[in-house]
Every structure is written in structure tokens, then in C-alpha cells.
Length: 296
Length: 201
Length: 92
Image 1 (cartoon, each protein chain N blue to C red):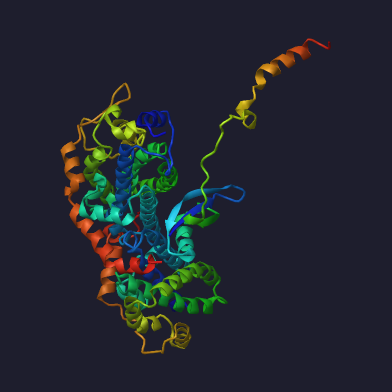
Image 2: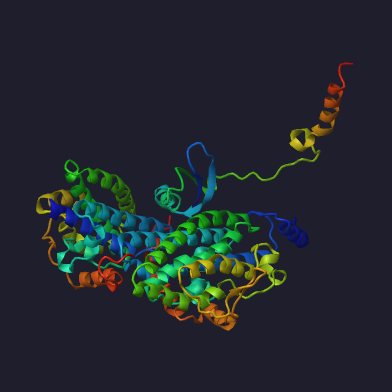
């Protein structure tokens, strides 16, 4: 099937392809970039939460948070293996991540300031991610679609954990409630930017190739529809006076700051530089271990 | 017996806490996942022993003064390099096996812990074999050996010495929790202390 | 070395490909796959196979379209209808 048009029709009709199949150059390039960014994001997403593993206020929370972060590392392992089978070795992916050549999702460039952030991230950031990830279950590239199944299954634990952390705090002391509200106020902007600017699916090559099976705006609407009611029912407020659901079911909101999104994902987020430096430090420090172990 | 068990639980808690710090930054992703499970298991063991000693395992784990913890100096060390980390893992698991098997008659929980620790021992031995000839690992074992002896009561130390094939030396004993431990305890408890005692998290 | 991981949900279920791990030998592969595919009780058993040991078969020749070998090579409906109608009409 060495015919790009036939390939396009095949994937748009729901067809999937495997590693050894002929892939159009543009498809392969976009696929690698997309999947690599996902792997990078899981790996970088570890860092904001990791600090709080050491500070968790109960043994149960300590274990649950460690398990969540462990899952994210596991996801990056699954994802980088898929990228490697497409031709780009893990070492190269990690080198490009550190140098800033490749990207990771906006939310992981921001600081975590309190235990409230830990609740908000597990509950809402993971929720936003799981919406995209569920759509990826239908990715035209089958090896990636298949690992998404395990990833989505593990993410469901994270959301439960996040919800539990939030509920404990919003029913705790007024100070604990405030921790959640304050964290939500800070995270709302990045959350609204998370699914990307509302490029119409017809103009989105990722959608055309059925790498993504859902447009950005559709994902955002799904997020709002699922989670704003949950936020409001707890007595929390969303820092957007324009946020409302129209009669036709569409959510209206203040236009997210797309410049901020671009600025952040191109490596200028508040914590980008020091998190990449942290990664680089440990990669370099433990190179001798990889040399000894993987030399076989 | 209670002091022995509390020391054991504190060891598991603190080594678990130290080992959990590698989550996300271990030398390879596959190991990162496996190592994190070991850290979680250790904390699970601590919790199980605390539950034997108290109604409130969290209070026992978090709310004592740093000087009241009975953990061995070995587990308190902040070792953020892999050579030392694996050296500690290995030495600790060998010592822990001696300790735990000695308790099996009196403590049903010991058998349970021991079954899970079997995987930790396999993991530690697997890594020890791979790193045995590296200068980093050898130097680390040399450095940590006196600390490892301090994990066990004096009468069990020769068993440890013969298993790791090293001569017994003067041990770094329990009982001195240094500034590094105080710093760890402060970080461990900073969120918990931000709400009144008994607050839910 | 790449090790393919096949995992079983529970006894009686087929082993399904779950992904792969990079490990220098069987011992590391086991230790690592065990946690990656078992820590949340996800699998009751794993098969680990070095990628090089997997033989891939993914091409067939079907030049003469031997339909009898496939379910779609049989059109039962029309004849079944006819047979039922005849049976309903009584013995000949």
C-alpha cells in the first residue's frame, strides 16, 4: 500500500497499522513527534509531584502518591519503547528533551507550591489528560493504541486518589479548603490551555492521520462538561467569570492565553530550566550504571 | 521486644522514605518502576508493625520528636547516588533477613514480611552481581559496612559478617540521630504539621 | 536486549502482548517486567520472550481466492429460506 492517498483513506476509515507496515514519511515523522512528546510529558510530569512524595501527610497518601508517580514513569517506559521501535532510540529522546529540542506539555512547566496542588493535579490535570488518552485508544498506529489501554487503566486510579485527597481537604479545616481553592486558582489557566488552541480538526494533521481521533476543542468541552460541575458542587469557585454552560450544551469561557501556552511549551515556563537541569544531572550522574548494566 | 520492633519499623519507614526519593530519577526507567515498588513495600512493612504497636500508625510514623525514632544510622543516610544506594540496599537486606528470620517464631507478621523481602533480596543480589567489580560500588560498601553492622544487635553481627564475607569492625550504633535526620523529619512532617493534630488528609 | 512481554489477566485467559522491556538478561527482564506488569495485580502470569526469538508471519498468498476456507465463502441464507419453504409446503 505504498500510496499516501490510499493510506489516508485507510486510516480515516478506522484502519490501523503496525510497526512493520509501510508508513508515509509525513505520518511517521508526525507520529514520532507526537508520541515522543507524550513520553516526555509523563517523565517531566513526575518532577512536580515527586517533591511531595517526601512530604505526604499520612502513610496512605505517601504510598498512593508514590504509586501514582511510579505509574507515570512506567508510562514513559511504555511510550519510549514505542518511539524506539519507530526508529528513535531512548537515549536520543532523552537528549532532545534535555536540550529543549523536543517538547512536553504545558502543565509540567509550572511549580507545585502546596499539598493543595497535589490534589488538584491528580484530580483535574490527570482528568484533562485522560480525556486525550481515551481518544488515543483509537490511534491509527496500533502499538501506541495498545499501550494506551494500560495507561488509561492506571490513570483511573490517579483520579480516584486525586478526588479523595481533594474531598478530605474540602471537608477538613477552613485552611485546608483554602489550600485547594488557591491551588485551583493557579492551575485553572494552564488547565484551560492544556488541550491546545481550538484548531479545527480538518486543519489538524494529527487528526487527519487519525493519530488523534478528537479535536482540541472537543476535548476541552468534554473536560469542562465533566469537571466544572464537580468543582462547583464542592463549593469551590473557578477563576473565570465568563465560564458558563449555554442552553445548547456548549461551555463558554474566557479565551485562554495562547501566547502563554506557546511561550511555556517552547521552554520558557517558570520551572522548565531547573527541571530539565535536574533531569540532566541525574542522567549524567548515573551514566556509568547504564554503561555497566546495558553493555551486555 | 517493643523497642526491637519499633526499631525495625523505623528502619523500614526511613529506608522506604529514602528509597522513594529515587522515584522518577533512577538510572533506567524499568528500574525506576521496580525500585519504587521496593520503597512502597518497605513503608507497608513499617505500617504493619506500627499497627501492632499502636492504634494510630500515622501518629507513630510522623508525630514523634526526631530523637525518639529508633532507626539505625544506615537508613538515615541521604545517598543520592546509585552505587551507595545499591550498596545500602544489599547490606540492609542481608541484615534484615537475619533479623526477621530470628523473629519468625514469635511474630506471625515476620513470615509475611519475609516472603515479600525475598523479592527485595533477589533484586539486591541481581544488582550486586552486576556492580560488584565497579569502583563506585566497592567504595560504597567499604564506607557503609560499619553502618550495616549497626542495624543488628551485637549477637547477630557475626552472622552478617560471614554472609557478606567481611571482617567485623566497630559498628555505627543506633541512638544518634543527626542533623540530616532532623532535616528529613522536618520535610516528612511539614504538610502534616500545617494542620492541627487529628486533621484529616 | 528487547524482551516482549505477554501477560495473562487471570487463569484461563489467553496471554496477550502487553509491551516490551529493555533488559540485559532474563534476570533483569523478570525483575522489571514483574513490576511493570504486575504491581497493581494486573496480571497473574507473564511470558517473557527475547524479541529475536519471535518469528513473525504476516503475509499469505491467496491467489486463487479459495473461498471455501472462509466463512464468507458460504451463502447459506437464500438456500435455507428455500429449504424452509419447501418443508412448510409439506411432503412431496
